[in-house]
Length: 213
Image (cartoon, rainbow, N blue to C red):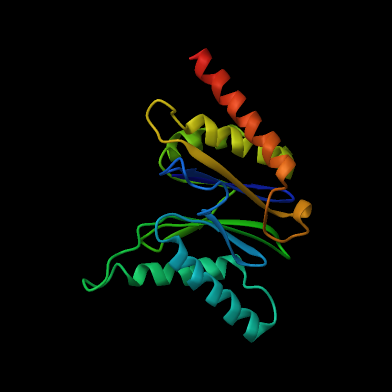
């Protein structure tokens, strides 16, 4: 599974490649992009549900104490410390996840990635999971300061489809979410019409790229 995050001037886009373990899986279920708070979102892997619960607790506790959303750097630090604690003792296993989280606060759009070790960094764009090297190469080609949120959605879809190898990998369902100006500064999955357009664009661009190779 691959997750990418793209930060542009007016928001953040998260995209996830949700591998389909069964053809009978209902579309839209078993989501990999989850909301931790009204202003925070996460692209998660195997242990994501547990970390989502922890993130929601951190968001709620901060909001109860300070009457405002938790800054993303502080949330990243708390989640990083939590993950790191599971690497220190033989009685528990480390988490098997890399996490990408985003928010929009008074300082603008924010994007962080947290490793299983608990280390975390802020990014303009990042990728975690299988195929992250190719995805990172594509992200580095983007002129992020010139992209709108809508344009970033299309680029995220293109990169997810480009990295996927249909001859080797399982089928997948694309997930797309955003937070920023176009979403009233709250995390949400992108509108259905935009999702459909971006998904078709991603497929066509990936197929064109493979034919040229």
